[in-house]
Image (cartoon, rainbow, N blue to C red):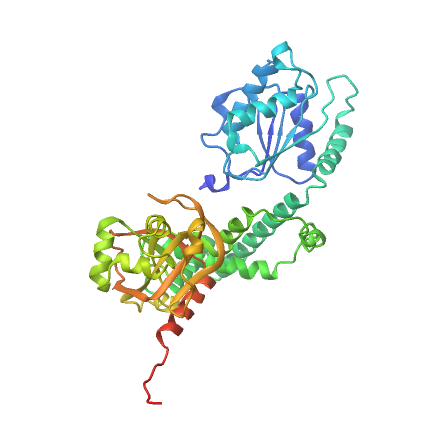
Length: 456
């Protein structure tokens, strides 16, 4: 239970009491909670790195050594504490020896701070582009170090000044603070409901179970219940965020956020942004065939199932989606490079209410960016989404992470039992709600066209 609270956002790494007590007191004075690591003993380090750290203040000499040995040791402690999967992390080098140069010629006269940064990034290249290094002065003992309380006050000011000018980082921190505040608001609302039963713990259980039962609408089991609780709490979080008074720390960023981006946007960035806007990871727990889920058609078994279900071959489907002429090099590249998929487009309400006995799957292709010029011009039965590329973040066997587009054909559709996903379909990723709704509307329109015969 207590492990749910083990997610510090600030960490101080320092082994000298005369140094770490004032910095911890300064953080307390700023009402910032932190975890303190001495760094002397590997036994005190966590078994897994912290994923939520946002600010790390570290000394450079943790084991009495200097130069390369000190840099290597401190870098090792750092990698044990800070996950490579979290970003951005502001690393404040707070050391009496940051500006000292190496102790031997092979150190190439790098300062201790430079040596640490280089050693850390060489040891763990995944940190590159994720860490923001800053330096804060730490006076040596007896060399102009003020009296304790005065120094604590000065440290508070130093920390605040040091973090100024990093607007994007501050905006993210302010947003995370708003989310935490909104989460507390949800807990308060649920506690108010629980109080009506007299016992808070029992009342919270009752309230959560009722929310889950309502959200599940018949799809309730020990496996699906946590997902339904997360879904309903996420909806409450959105409501809470809409009504939470935005703090000054957040609203102050309106000026630079509203400024047009005048510099050229890297072509590699647009697909990454589109990926965040359009796609999400697909959960394999609970209800099979979630609306918007995209399934990769697997191997020979999938090719056979495709023909058996539709009465048309996979080859005919691939050729119906390209303008490349059969037998050409472009056609061969198309056949080899595109990945057949199916997307689930059943109405969300049918799934939520448990009314779905079969699923509606529409055939499509994941088309690498290099082959997009070979896509046949969209028609009423052929839909390309989005109109620009997005970055496919989840690789699978035979298909690497890359920039892609999606292409769907309303003429190739499946209906399968909703109870389980066959082995020839691999759950890959899903489209978010609005792109899925857009495809559902397109499919409904394409299949409801009215045609009639007349003699002119």
